[in-house]
Image 1 (cartoon, rainbow, N blue to C red):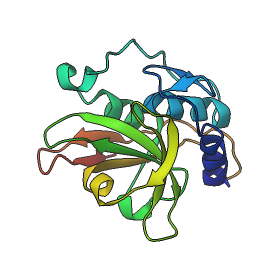
Image 2 (image 1 turned 90 degrees about the vertical axis):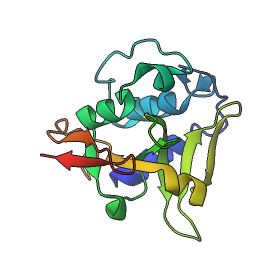
Image 3 (image 1 turned 60 degrees about the horizontal axis):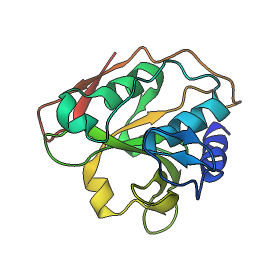
Length: 171
């Protein structure tokens, strides 16, 4: 039930224009703003205040800020266990920090589908084709139970791995 609620919430954002740092349904959102907005609708208040960030934050920061934040507040999931409603994180190039996130919306069909704020466009639902799957770095689940109530934050941390730009989960 929780994955379905997440997907329904994310689909209600479709068509929201892309706006850097925004998170207002129908007005504007970037990829993180979409996940933040769905969090507010499905989980409740956002767990931490987000600092301002530039469009090139991942290129200049040298940190895995997005990956670390997901690990603090969401439950890590193995790629082969991902399901609709999970948050998927992408590394846009080898050696770069994780910079894009989306919500997995469907696993049926020829390829998985995802909902994400597409730079220069809007919140869209698109195929998670080979190009995206090659860049998939991590999968996280919203901290809600199957009946829809919030659960405690993750006690598992994410540790980046130097091998193939991926990472490892540590309890």
